[in-house]
Amino acid sequence: MSSRFVIAILTVASAIHIAAAQSSAPGSNLKSNIDTLSSFDYSSRMNAARALRRATPAEVVPALIEATRRHSDEFVRYRALIVLTSFNDRGTPELMRTLLQDRNDRVREVVYRWFERNPEPALSPLLLAALNTEQSEFVRPALVRAVAALPSNDAVRRALVAEIGRGFDFFRSAVIDALGDYRATYAVDAITAVALADGPLQDDAVLALGRIGDRRALVTLSTLTNTSGDVAAALQAAQCMLGDTCAPRIEWLTTTARSQTVRPEAVRAAVAALGAIAQQDAAARTAPL
Image 1 (cartoon, rainbow, N blue to C red):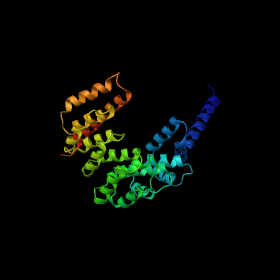
Image 2 (image 1 turned 135 degrees about the vertical axis):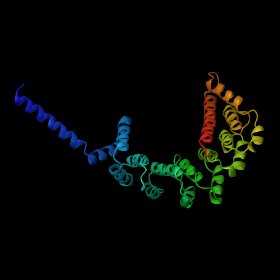
Image 3 (image 1 turned 180 degrees about the vertical axis):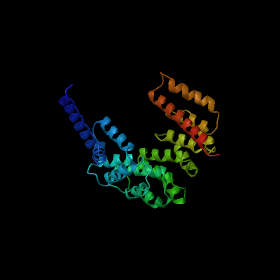
Image 4 (image 1 turned 135 degrees about the horizontal axis):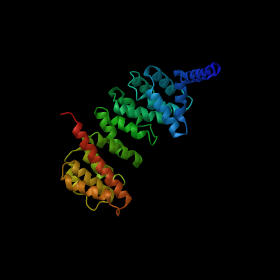
């Protein structure tokens, strides 16, 4: 092999290496990956998010904060905030506070979900006030859960109990679910009233009573007879969660979930009921002694 040919190969290899190094410079990669968070191609935006999560926090966190605050693409703002929450950055709480009333409803949803996991009692007045103004169908449930996660006080209790009977069924269902998940014993009477009434929220209310765990609800649940498939499954799960002969109820739900002759809606209800039992059991196993 001639020396001239070897030199040519080395020159090309060096040029390729330099180009690759330039294209992988931190600044250019961060901007490109952040911009790609709104790509219509699923794999592209997922790969961009993955690359950002693997980047050095000192470099990527400021870029994500800037994108969340000021990027011209509203979907990028939303996705950048989601990626940012995967970093345990000390500036995240302050950023979240500034975004509580953001114009982007997707951003507000992320903010409320973050405050559900990281409750701040000082924000109670702002969150309670938002219950009177927030109307986005996918943001409001996140707001309700953020309120339910707050330390219980009279204002929080009154607001959430009032929400049980307020607005569209979709919103009311989210309130009932949140109260069940947070074992809101103060809401038992209001949820019991829903559980006793035929309607689309009856199964949600029955399951919530089981999750709350107040055994007084067993008297109420025992009066429910000739229930529909959805409510019947919720009833079996609730009675199990309240300690009333669990094994045969789980067997009934399992048989229903596996059946190929019952309605698909009944199968889904049975699966959801089994999931509620499993969730409660997992919570009990991990609860501090």
